[in-house]
Amino acid sequence: MPRIGIESLLKGSDRRSIGRSNEVARLVLKQPKLFPQLIASLWHDDPSVCMRAADAAEKVSAQNPHLLERYKPQLLGLLAETEQIELRWHLAQMVPRLKLTAPERKRAAASLRHYLDDRSSIVRTSALQALADLSQDDAPLRIEAKELLEQAIHYGTAAMKARARRLLKQFKE
Image 1 (cartoon, rainbow, N blue to C red):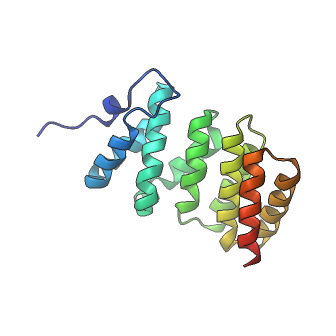
Image 2 (cartoon, rainbow, N blue to C red):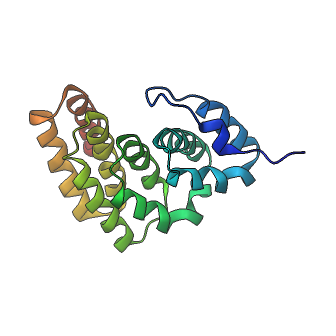
Image 3 (cartoon, rainbow, N blue to C red):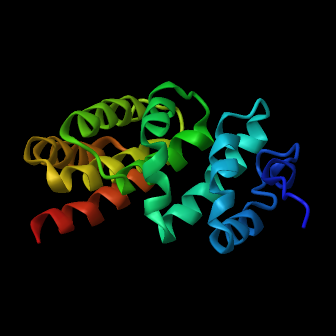
């Protein structure tokens, strides 16, 4: 059987399209040994490949979060350094699925706070969600996340306001 090139399945010039990322996610879910190829594609030179790899990795990790653990240092590094909008919002979805130590959670939260200033409403909304998710095991972060959610209700975009209202209900439960 020929080696499947994840990267070749993710290529395409239109960054507005997820291309074959759903197909890649299904393939990796069936063959988890392909996950390293998928993760490696997050650092590809082609931004379209990175975006589609992030989309597929997020979908795979939603069903199998343990696959991310091996890549925790790299993902936290990418979370801090990437400027690509599509990578940011997908990383914000994936990082809370990691088993983080207190220092790692602090590092992730710092990156996500920076995302709250992103020009993309999707990135800002994803960052709010991620901060709320990370705060579940961190009382000081939970206080800060609640304050950020309350601010988002007053000053955020429509998407941020809606997400903040939903998340604040969970904080009261």
